[in-house]
Length: 286
Image 1 (cartoon, rainbow, N blue to C red):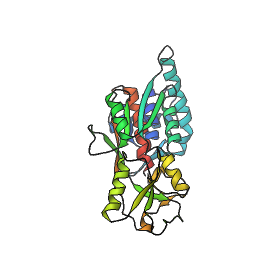
Image 2 (spheres, rainbow, N blue to C red; image 1 turned 180 degrees about the vertical axis):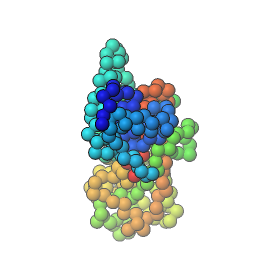
Image 3 (spheres, one colour; image 1 turned 60 degrees about the vertical axis):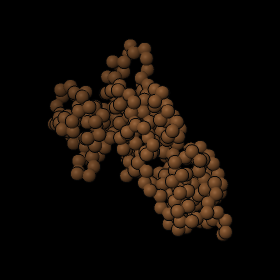
Image 4 (cartoon, rainbow, N blue to C red; image 1 turned 90 degrees about the vertical axis):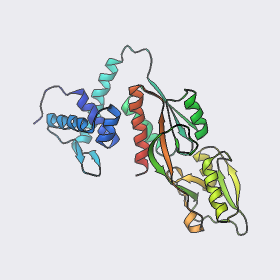
């Protein structure tokens, strides 16, 4: 039976973040508290509603049927509260996040939707660039945070979000022309992925040529889709219909690269939003 007392907004917010981030620990990090405190808040809300909102196992936390039914109402409740508190705010909240061009892919629309659900008044500015440019913008104070591929030359430590696997992406039936160097689609000489791949080819004596140069995963991947070259891309951002042809063509395997978050803001709400971004990248590799 449901307790008709007023719902505690802290409990509802804990439920929403746990559902959105798929775990009590991530929700605790976002709210700056402990996993036990978040779990207690969710259990208290479930007890008050007389419904089990989350299914818990050692491997995952996910919405139950009742949790799914309650989700939208919970968002409306917290959203109405936040809008009321911010009714006289003259300045809109804003967070600027830089993301490596090699990491932007099909997960971007759901990521933006998650951020909107977290705070519909939050103005999110995403800037795509190479890792070097993102690091410079962080140092200049242009960015609140950056998500990029870890590099040995990186001057600042970051929090590891996931490990990204790169491959030799091309159309399934694509084959190089006999007697000609392997054509590659890259982001140019300054790109660390290009250096990683060409060194691997040089080490095993495979001749290569840079057949196409573009900026961003979509541009580099277009050459693979068109059959012009093999694109050096992470599997998650490769164009639909392309596959890693490395094993079939006898090409050297490429090492995993860590994806890291470097955060430069101390503002609590912005850091909460960045937890949503971090979760999206980590979840995309599962």
